[in-house]
Length: 350
Image (cartoon, rainbow, N blue to C red; front, side):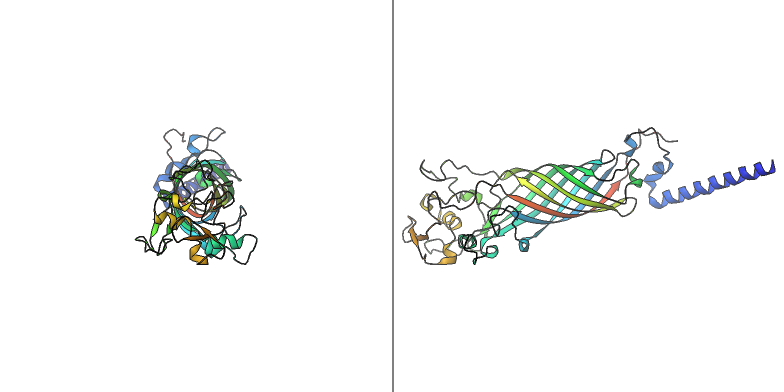
């Protein structure tokens, strides 16, 4: 009996110490974790008590792939034009591996022929360098993606993995507005009021979007492009648990867009006389800023203005861009996330 009593006393003391330790840990984590500390589990399956939310803020680096990339390759980009961005996200954990994430992202894309193209590359660089187009585009993106973790978590948020790789895919809508800096003078040498300023390119119709083109023109039937577009975001990364309520993640992803006009460049050159203003003409054809007097001149139709052969005049082979490939942009992110205490009003506690 004495041995039995001693064993019972030891068990009671052990339970008391354990309970006291649990109380101390719960207070140290957060008041909102009290119920979680008392949770003893239930039936198998991912119940509502294991669903939780988190909010995050990310610092992003953005890069552009398109007609103003250094080379025609799909994966060609100019790293020197990497621009910063910021993102805000809300994530809802839905299963052992599965989460849904909504995110707002803001950042800038940039490209420049004169700075990126290799003018010593006779096969393509010379053409791109002499084309001399440039742009910036401020992106405002709203996305919803499914996030799939490699390592599952069958427990609550406090028992999530120390780290896990993940992949994501979803859908995004974004607003964009390509711009470029206006030259000092128009093609006839007259000063431009917009000289040195960032100018919105879409309203100018630099490829004849607002012009009356004839059926024989290479760009006949071209339409103004929309500044509201859709993209498919996809990528991969890794998430690391800092403590009970903080995570740090890093990922790299791409946005496949359904437009070729992030840079305002896609189709052929258009007859400059059909554009609406000297500003539109100057923003459509900028080779004169590189070559000066053309070495192989072609009449432009504008009094006193010749253009370089192959640039700035309407012809089926005078390509300004490559309309067979849509533009892509890349987002590299580092995100800090905070787990919001879940609601347990439907969970069962002992």
